[in-house]
Image (tube, rainbow, N blue to C red; front, side, top):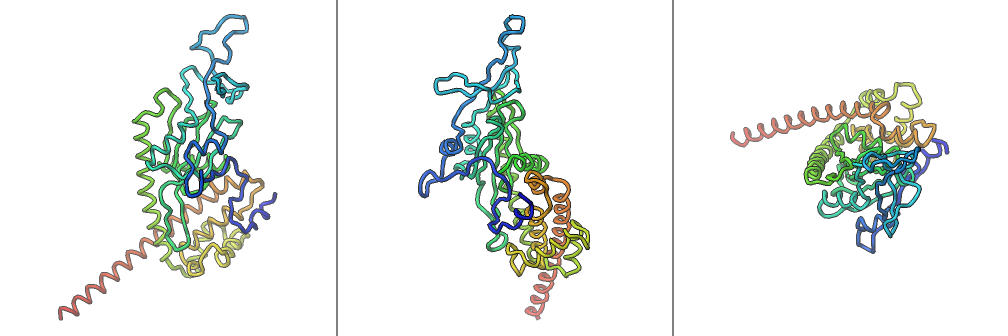
Length: 348
């Protein structure tokens, strides 16, 4: 499917091929538990590490500790099922799989009251398992413009990675976006990694994860405040064009497309089109729905990767945020001066 067709979808749904299962409520008004979510996403199975080659090519018996292990699903009777979910990969005998049930239980424990599960599933034939849940309350810097915090977990059953937990503000739904979101979260200290060992879910690791969540909550407040400031930053036409030119040079198709979005997009309120907030909305909408991409995987990279187009948008956001802070300081100074003058008048 071409990028043009994807860009013209009017529903604003995620414009990519998605994986996993959207989690439905357990009943009317009753959120799904992690147990419910596992059943809906077909994740209600366990795995076990077992030797792959207990007997050598010469007929000799390997010692159990030295034999490479594979990760197998186990059936209701506790027997191994073939082929292994780890495929051709192997792990050491010290590898202790983190079960699917423990992934969601950890997130529930970290957040306290239990998560509202959004999506969960497996890919690579069960070698990777992931889950996404809403984290805390939405925040709304502008009326009708809602941002939703999430917590994401990804674990592996093939030795390719640890259990990774991250907080984010985007709703991921494909493997590329999941991996890119985790990479970005790691760079921003919104990430914790837990190795597959016998003490994987120890209190110290849970404490570390809680610290990440606390930091995320603080940054949510900072982000909401910054967005509110950007909404008050009114830009002359020249400054708007300068901001867009940081991302796309003038007289280019990309520049024209961004200016067109800023002027006409129904996702930007009319009163915001000449503000820093409106400019950022136009830039990100261009990246996620309109920027050229040969494949859907390429579009995922456009959206989530911390380089190229997105890095330019991030840099522009920092410039505009700085301008908003300066404008806020000036307003505070003006307000303070007016208050001082008022007090003088009263005293006279």
